Image 1: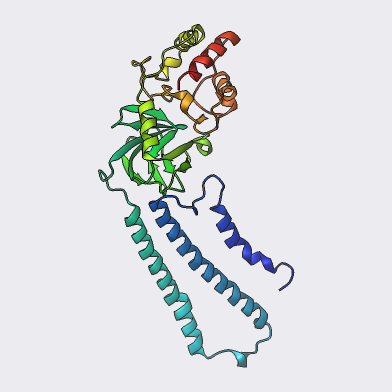
Image 2: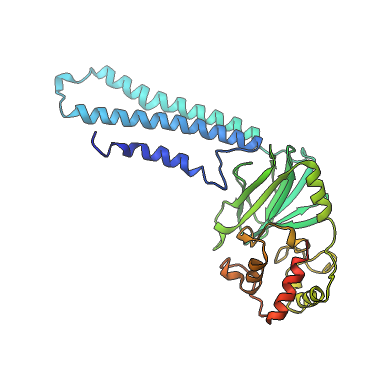
Length: 333
């Protein structure tokens, strides 16, 4: 077949590798729903691979024998008809019917049933970040979703602007967020871990950088995190952090960001994320960079250098004022 005979192996290899990204691996399920979806994926993959190999083999046989055959070597017309009936009609119908049945079974297994989970979380998509509300626990956060491991959690999701799509490949399939319409999805993590989620629907210039984290914790750790998040923001403990709070108001940060216990009058989540416990979060800019002082400073001074197209304006501050503001924001643990 020559030195280029390996080419026919390339498509199936690319299909497998496409699902094996280090951070979001849909072929490594860590929840019941994701396991159901992965099983369907593998079923479709092996069926598709078998058909692909069969077609390649038949094509190679035809290419190898076609030039040497004579009219007298052709099979009877009946065999040709049977080949068309079996290979062109019967087999495709069987494969498609089996795939349809398997898909319906999987869909029924992963469909959300409103009100069946003890814990409800609301997720609202914005350009280009995620607001996360815990209505039963009475607090709001952003871009991080903490859940107790081994327990089904009901997500009530919607969009505040354009169509988004919430997807955590290792825990569940994708579900679109329609503007001002509620949808439901039940998610469960079978083991502790940090699972990367993303927006899977083009929603603007930073669609590809609209990440979030789902952090599955043992029940006692999750309850400790909830207790910490329920607390209002700490009051400034030093003159520097008090100055930072004054700058927070003076520069207009409070017009877009709420801090519980400090800016109750702000419209939470109307423009930007709630900052009550900003310092306890792992990332900034909806998963863009690690939440460390240098990145936080750069985000305040020039957020577009990290995430071009974000709606947050740059803050023009004197160096001393900037340091004080960052000190205050870092105190919000």
